[in-house]
Amino acid sequence: MEQLLFVLLACVLVSFCSGQSSKMCHQQPCPEYQVTETNKDFEERLYVATDWITTKLDSKETVDVLAANKRLKDYCQRQKEAGHDIPDSWPVLITVTEGKDASDFYLSWFVPPGTEPEIPDALVNVQHKNAATVYVRSFGGSPSLNSGQENAKVLREALIKAGKTFDPHTSIGAAYDSYFSLIHHNEIWIYAAL
Image 1 (cartoon, one colour):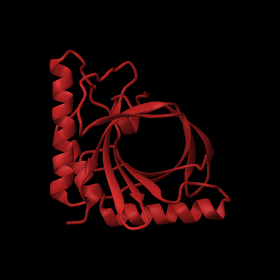
Image 2: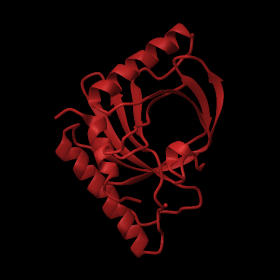
Image 3: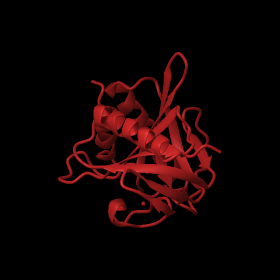
Image 4: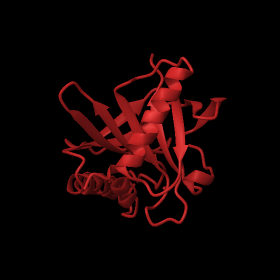
């Protein structure tokens, strides 16, 4: 099944590792940002520096997404047992980087400021992202790989039309709700070119 965003939100149902609290983050920590520009097709946001726990997916198949989710959950449990609790937070990300011959997929959970994961793990990285400009397209409805790909395409076209420069190879699906939620807030993120 190639419904990567569906699986991403299904992963949210499994408890995982308690920014800025907002309606879409359900009063949980989430990355802080300022909206610097808004138009009908996207928002331009300036995100502060953030940290994420990230693991690579072997593929976009459901079994591999669930295995990555388990790796992050186990990592958080080991951190908690060592006295380094990673609180629940939003969003959960799936990053897709398209290469010349293949694509890479990563699952990431936001690490709230002041949280210090310290137990090393060969399969889970603590990834620091510097402050950056991110172009964001929000969309609702039940998430799926198809809706994510469609919205990434619409966002890229809107960015070209607006004369924005961006990373054409990487897009990020951000999920803020359980798959079984009645209302879904989904986003596609594309980083501005440096």
